[in-house]
Image: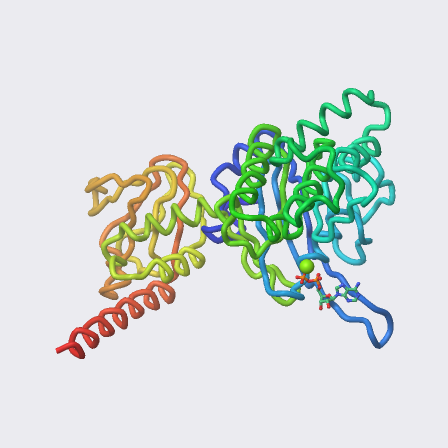
Length: 384
Ligand SMILES: Nc1ncnc2c1ncn2[C@@H]1O[C@H](COP(=O)(O)OP(=O)(O)O)[C@@H](O)[C@H]1O
Ligand SMILES: [Mg+2]
């Protein structure tokens, strides 16, 4: 949970967290201090370390990371295909670290894994129908057929329902596997490289289907992928390196913050990459209406960007208001640049969310900017 006491990076700050809290919305996936080991005795090897993760219904997560970093392990733990050994992991409200009753939960999960494991003797339709019959044994045959056909159509295989795997291309087989993973209307979809074998257009079709499910039915979707053609589908990108979540970025928020920073004249010479890095170091801070955020005469230690709310800049013994600042405006840079005390006070006029950058990081950004300018000068000079 985010509050004024916990330190949340700006790119992890979820602007709708208060609404979630008010609605009592629970995460679809909640991992705390999750570890995992393979092997026994001397061969025991840790592959997941101290992982925390909080994913909400309707979010699409893209998980990336080098081969061997633990992505499939994490995905199979979430999918209840492996036992939780250490730490906590709750999936759709079921605490996996405490329970072994998983049958109902498994029915709510759709698996799309790399090895498609289709039955060679069954048609595309029959392969998909088998999954549906397992999940909903009491449904009627006609209804099952209709739903399977519609699902195959949705992945662009309406004209191949009677074909057996041998008569299908690699990409078509993969789409049958996708239809099979989605046909029982899961609330959580776990997909390992679902689009790797697909051409551009089929990949798009699948991604649009994921988007629709997430948006219209609040299905939570985790996609492990290196396919950067589908990065735009992600609400969040989770990067795993050596068994640890190295970054967890809310894509839209990261873009908003970077754009806000780019509009600050003090950072106008920073590259998009440096801005994104800086966004990663901003910390979200909440201030209640009426709080004094900085005080005239004190030493400056932070730069602030207003993410939500409104503040007043005030100066002098009678606190004369000089200006009101709103979302996207910033303050606090003068004291950091000049080394002088704060030349004004700043008060929150409403409940306000600020992103703050420490003096050290601010100076780092400024020096990057200086080296950027030096570089340009040098390159101009070299050209002469
Ligand atoms: N069944 C297994 N037994 C032993 N080691 C395994 C097993 N599965 C994976 N590993 C090891 O665990 C680490 C993480 O693997 P994996 O989760 O498959 O990573 P990724 O999906 O990111 O490539 C790797 O070092 C891999 O060799
Ligand atoms: Mg893998």
